[in-house]
Image 1 (cartoon, rainbow, N blue to C red):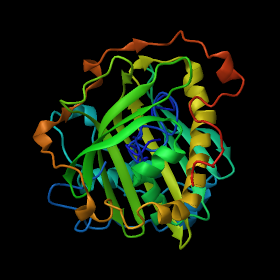
Image 2 (cartoon, rainbow, N blue to C red; image 1 turned 90 degrees about the vertical axis):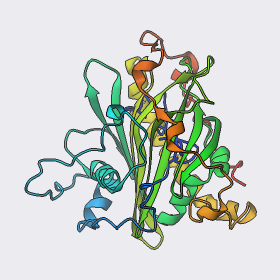
Image 3 (tube, one colour; image 1 turned 120 degrees about the vertical axis):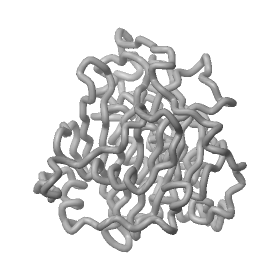
Length: 365
């Protein structure tokens, strides 16, 4: 899950970024690497400091229960609503838009939704769900939830944003960088990540936006086209339809993170990829992110401790970019790579992590 996804770019049913940091499309797999996802703004006029805080959930115990992967009572829904509305379909947009209040509210609702999701993994405080979006395509949504008992919500939020730290802990990263600033809480950036061998590696360009809501936070992104960063021949350009993170505080030193990703990996992927991503890669990536969070305060003290442009926009060194310079990245405009017949390599079957790397934390110093 890359920060692009907020991280970080943001994953399709485990088959797909979401960004450095919040830019990743997914926690791991062809649909995404840990973090990017998943970038940043509520609207050109409504910034993080002016957007009204959405109503907080009244069933905090429900959040903790689901974080542990245990059954939980259905969430209360408005009488006129059968189930929460998801984010506005990005692929239906004809122009690039910075997310508004409705987008953030609907993303939060989808993160908390229970209906239509199939639990594929539940162990040690990490749960993974998959939802098939179209039965005739390898396009899925993946949702991961993890309880962080020794990590404050604000620390996790910082980790997903800190692109330099992501390069230390996210071994899926090939290359990641921010391109330009759109508003005080939105930017556009690049993220490329390793996929399980022998699949081709992927990359994305995403618009990332973020919003603090009291003690909770949202980071989310979707794919855009930038004239200076066209698809590369050595990578498959994936499409983040909607990728992001919901961080909910459960105490002064604890929180729950939900990672939601819908990514079109631009390729007919074999079933083993989806299975591996939801049952192995995604949980491993979440646990690795947790370890990175625990070590972040010590690392940050040695690396520009006061530099946090996601909290202090005036610190951002990025050039400004007009929305008119970008366009929506539609999946059907990209070359489709058929990898459905690709078999899992022997190295992967014997325990390779598909780019996740080892659990060695020596690089986080």
